[in-house]
Each structure stands twice: as structure tokens, then as C-alpha cells.
Amino acid sequence: MVPSTDPFSGVYIKALAALFWPHSPPVILHYLLLLLIRPILTAARLPAGAFFTTYESTKTFLHAINPSLRSSPGTPLIPLPILHAAASSTGELVSCFILTPAEVLKQNAQMVVRGSSSSSTTHAFDSNATRQAFNKFRNNPSQLWRGYTALVARNLPFTAMQFPLFEFLRTEIYRYREEKGSRSGTLLETGIVTAISAGSAGTLAAVVTTPIDVVKTRIMLAAAGDGGEGQREKVIKEMEAQRKDAKAEIEKAQKAARGERAGGLAVGKEILRTEGVKGLFRGGALRGAWTALGSGLYLGVYESGRRFLERRRVGDEGLAPY
Image 1 (spheres, rainbow, N blue to C red):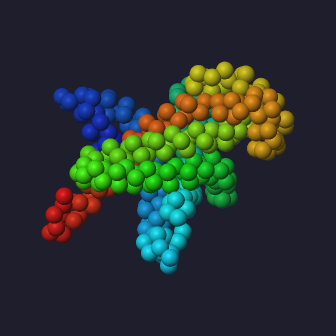
Image 2: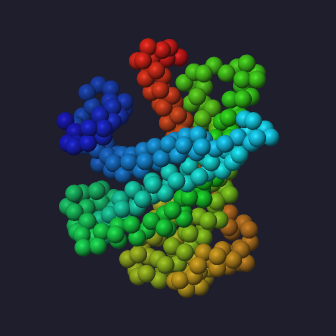
Image 3: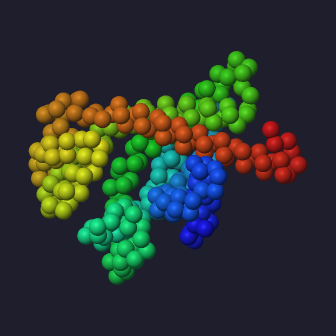
């Protein structure tokens, strides 16, 4: 039996264990998957749910109140991409508001167990470490959201660009299929069309926003280089895990930042001066490819599941589900 107080996590982990070990998966496999997957499910499920709930609700509301042009009935007064950008931005603000405390607690829990001989990633989700980290904020809970602005600044440009593109591409693909008479309306079609639209939109948004990510990374590395040996070693390990020359990157970051308090614009100008446009888009191809895969799978599964539940609900009400 999996020692989980989260029913969803327990069911998911059992199903995954059975997938890799169909005939009576050993208990040790359940425990291993619990340690590796349950923290991800717990940390990511709520912000993702909050994002899509807010996004869908805001999008529906904005569509409802958006009037049509008098000169062209049926044409919305405010272009749909603007509405979709506003809806996705609102969803991202809500998602980051929920995610920020989890990130802050995780980072502080890792600091609590830094001296442990075991893996800090595993212990970061240990109840004792989390409790000790939470105690630090008992007198001033608002500090749990101290990284909210930085998280929003990192995620909002990408989200605000991806979802309008995604909605536009999906609509155009469906329109093209209708004109050709090939639209089937099946869940498979929904998943494939959504995956292609989301992957393409995610790739373009990821490449365009790469300079923001590069500047943010340089500022963080510069701060790490000046923030003590412990922080420097932590960042070096993270960069080496990504197969990057961490020490060289930190030296570049310190030169670009020219001090701990250098702003993003100053860092960007310095990168452009020393490395050119290529430096601002360093890693853009890899970022775009990874985003295409992740966004395609994520939104494809989400939209297929949403349509399936909608049709099931309609079928329960006595109408044809397909």
C-alpha cells in the first residue's frame, strides 16, 4: 500500500507502477515513484488548475461582453488575440500567486537539509524540513510571496504571446479542415490539432522571449557569483546539469551585470555589445524544441480531456455525446 494521504497521487502512482510492472508491482516501486512523482503532482496540479480555470472563465466572460462592430456585424470590436492575451495573463497572475509560496518553501526546505548526506531534492519535501521552512515565515507570512514579481516577469511575456497564437492557429486549422470537408469532431482530431497548434505557438513564443530568459539567467548567475560560496556552488551544479560551462557563464554574467543591482536593460545592452544578437538568443533553438514538445503534449491532453468530460456530461443529460 502506498503511504499517501493524497488520493489522486496514490491512484496515479499505482497506475504508473502497474504500467511499468504489469504483474504485481513490488511495494518498493510504489515507494520510489511516491518519492519522485508525488511532489511534482502536489506542487504543479493546483497552479495549473487555477490557470486553466481562470483562463477559460475570463475568456468566456470577455467574449460575452465584447460587442460587434456596427459596420461589420459578427466582427468583434476588440480583436480576439487581445482578449486571449488578457485572459492568459490573468490566469498566469493567479497561477504565480499560488506557485510562489510553494517555490519559496521548497528553496528554504532545501537550505534546511543542505548538510544532509541524502538527496536534498527528496528531503525538500520531507514534512519536517517543510515545517522548519514554514516556521521562518510564521511572523511575516507575506514574505512567502517575495518572489512573485520576478516569477510573473519571467512567465507572463511567454504566456501572453503563446495563447493568442495557439487560439488563432487552432481556429485556422479547424476552418481549413471544414472547408476541405475533413473535420471529424473526434477526440483524436481534437488532441492532434491542439497539440500541433500549441506546439507551434509555444515554439515561436519561446524563441521570441529567449532574450528575456537569457537576461534573467545572467542576472541570477551574477548574484550567485557575489552571493557566497554556497550559493555559487548550487548554481554551478544546476548549470552543469544542463551541460553548460557554469564558471564561464558566471564570469560572463558578472561582466554583463556590472554589479549586483544592475537592471535587466543594462544587462541586455551589455550582452548585445559583447556577444551580439546571437548572445541574446543563446539556447533559443533548444528552448523552442523543448517547449514544442511540452506544450503540445500538455495542451493536447488537456483539451482532449476537457472535450471528453463535456461530451460525457452532455450524454448524461440525455443528448448525443458525439
